[in-house]
Length: 231
Ligand code: CDP
Image (spheres, rainbow, N blue to C red):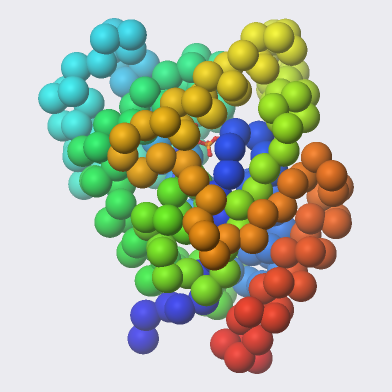
């Protein structure tokens, strides 16, 4: 029977979606999908092929996405730490706004929700958490639990700067802030599947709560909404 325990988590860059998803997946034995890593994987592959990222050739990008997806190579690229480099960050929103690329990626995400893969330790997943920008609105509009996670651009830029430094990259706060704001604008204003809080999504501002408070709040909502299925 298709899985119905689906949690959709959307929100802008650096809001804390990944941290919350990981914690919730561990707690509930759910499989997690970071959909941003798929768009990042395509972007990284194009960069490695030395494609002119300032003038993306649509036909090339779509064909490459199809190949990466059909051969499952996209999942290998998604594991490459370079998907989080500043260069990938710079171009990922331009790749993610191409409607045909979103279309190819859509089915994979829907299938993950309906048939979540086993957990890394081999246990069967009890549900799925999918995080991205359009999960609650386009990919899983019927998900029984939806969150929209946000934080001020300044808070998000400080977190991202720390991640770059921890990764060994050099970066400065003003550039990181500008890049986050530019990506927010592109994600919110694109024609296809823009980033938007679904009407039935619960808003969490992580500038106001620490990681533990955010987790506890989300857990309370999930326990309440998925009461019957989790028992
Ligand atoms: O990690 P971070 O919050 O910076 O972003 P991400 O979730 O890895 O997503 C990277 C980019 O992929 C976003 O800025 C979007 O342009 C795109 N994306 C998208 O369009 N739709 C999704 N469901 C997920 C990501």
